[in-house]
Length: 363
Image (cartoon, rainbow, N blue to C red; front, side, top):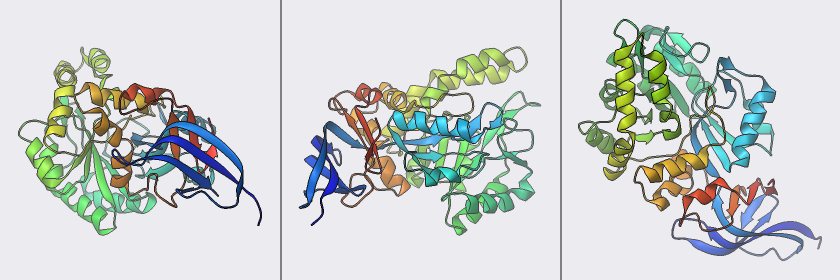
């Protein structure tokens, strides 16, 4: 019988919030909870192990002015990986990043295609900018390009109004979401303000990004429909600076952005208390740096979400929501090892001891 090189992870293996085991083995890049009989060349890693973290709102291949070269996208992905984010839901990118799938040293990406926005109602260079009569066709196109998700821009500043406003009429979003669901894709939308949310949720949307406009009136609707939110609080932290920059031209918009910022923690905690699924996303890409997944978990705790639930929002719960395995028997060995128990202090996530991706120890 030939000898096999294996990885032995021992200490505390957090398979789930209450499922803690003493060790696991990695053979041929896969997880096993039984010691392989032919294991001889064994490398041991000790500590507290979690499934690879999930950044459920990230933009690999996106820069401040649109798509970036592959070498820049590679650096973005490596930064996320070294921070422990081994599964990324890319919530809209104009770049073709399929080449990442061939790299065993880069995070796994679930793509939402390219953003779909209204003409002149989003950041230049990011999205398909179209009119409502074309929405169904573009949704179908991006549903086929993506990995089971489509990303709409649900609201943006209306320059004539001088404030945030919905980008799509209700009939258009109803038809677009129905088309995505017909093709087997889920739909999410960028939404800062209050005014677009009811139409999107009642039209059947699956998730809302940022969701700063959630109100006491809207929260029960989200909970009833099971619509998830990805708050991206590390991005919402930029609202005051954005408001200052737009004060002279759009004072109404600036005041609105400040109000959304000021109540951000109350919004997230109220959503969580109502049973709305909350997941971790950083909105990295564009102008925000990559590698912020630990900071976003800490922000959720600051908002009042219990530490174990904030961990679930980037590990067990997030992976289940996205249909990807965690530390299950036979699953790809994607895990992060820490010095101490992250359930006791989520700040531990900011200093991974080892990163293991596809069974390879990378850091």
